[in-house]
Length: 67
Image (tube, rainbow, N blue to C red):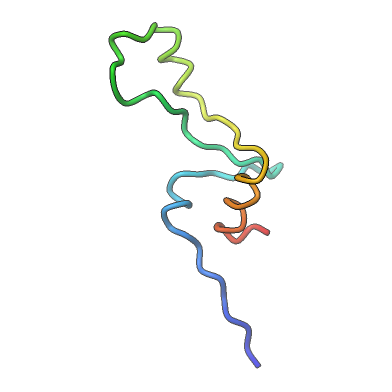
């Protein structure tokens, strides 16, 4: 009997990246609206990806077929 291949969740694949060491990265929030009010330092900090930890990281990896 042939095993069914698991499909990758394309929405998750677009939003998250898994590093070589297995960390899950996402884009930072607070980057869309009301940017005039935020400091320039904060806006620069929001450009950097943020690590996802805990249960969410595990779920995201599952959705991407990583484990």
